[in-house]
Length: 353
View (cartoon, rainbow, N blue to C red):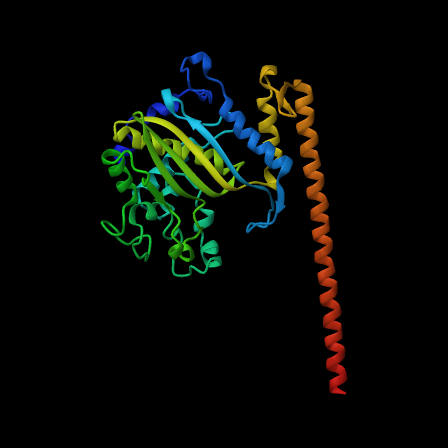
């Protein structure tokens, strides 16, 4: 899959409408286009904020987390699901996807284009923290693109020549879409258990299945871990673009992108930004509803904003309470260590005497 083919005709996506197709797809008139799918994304955020479990994580920041969620985005009629309630780094989406497709594992190729999304995970300090002392700075190990294009090939470094080595999952998927469109085995995985200790960061979006029906190509992606505030808008755009690209070169029309998530989480440091994002959408009185039992009832704009603010203020208070409790526990640990040291010193002096 050449670089030129991948970029072909996708400049038009820049000017695509910001709206997304209504979930009821029986009609395709412009009057039936509403931003329902973006509302569904914001409702996922709301569910995490309302019902998420406070969890610790590898970053030390802490998250609110729920398990198991799915959303569906229409790609028909030149609709592209780029969120409108937050800025999405569109050029970064395109450059990273082309980098994946190339099979590269060299993060410097992105940073040279001022796409710095992998800089932190390819730094000398981070690689050393993963025990990858033999990697050059910028070497991410056998990550997404390598698994897509060279699955099963032994990995040595980002500068090695892997051309023709391993199993080219992406090319095989394209071949099956063309030759066996009815197949239920059009699958691509970035999750290779044998390589997990060799990568700077194990893949988050790790399993993809393509589906052909009625001349349309759809894609479902499973993501084991999803940063809902920062990463998910990027992931939605990336896999929707991949689906459009493959549909184009296989003479199909884009259908849907289905996003299935395992651990869907919001970092505690992102709460304020998501508060603004949710409030910014509440500008049209006709879009605001709330659930009372099984019934959707119209909700006033002022009440909706007030509810969001109260909910997020509670989260901030809860975060402070838990942080204070953690600090207290740390102080108690230090105090206990001091006592142990004192007893050890006393024992040592007694033994000497």
